Length: 82
Image: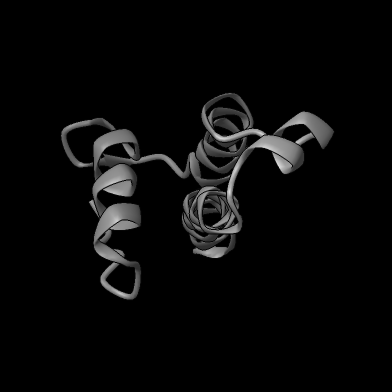
């Protein structure tokens, strides 16, 4: 399988786990994996709504945003890696 050494450790692990269809056969699923990670981010850490903004501290909202951003950063790496 082609190495994707320019990826972060998280993106590298995902890339290796899903891009080898069978031993020695490389298949590029980067776009599909990126879509799946974005969907996971929307489910696990959705955008804060008005209730969240009224009831969570600024620190909690920032942490939530940071976690969400990390999902999207990994997704972008996988999507843009060729």
